[in-house]
Length: 128
Image 1 (cartoon, rainbow, N blue to C red):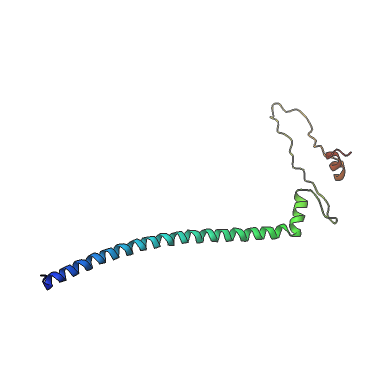
Image 2 (image 1 turned 180 degrees about the horizontal axis):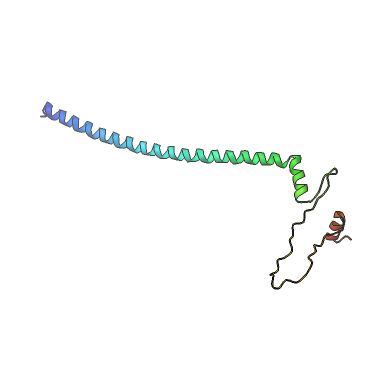
């Protein structure tokens, strides 16, 4: 027969084992939750960066569809001007420097194309 004191010890042992199992399971779930929280933070950061990039691209697309972009490209890449403007070409070429001992009197002249712009384009495409 078992005594009440022995039954109490068995019950306490059972409760202690059950508590340890419960605490171990709870700790592993807390670790898994922390890992998932960290992963959620990483994904939220990636989403924020993607949304910022999308906003930047939308601004750029709006600018590309604007008249200001067309005018900028026409001026910078094609060399076009508006009808009420005058084209000014700034020549920044400097003559080469010659050492003083070997200097000879020479004149450096820059060649400037006297053809009009449309004639230069025709010559470029071989139509003239």
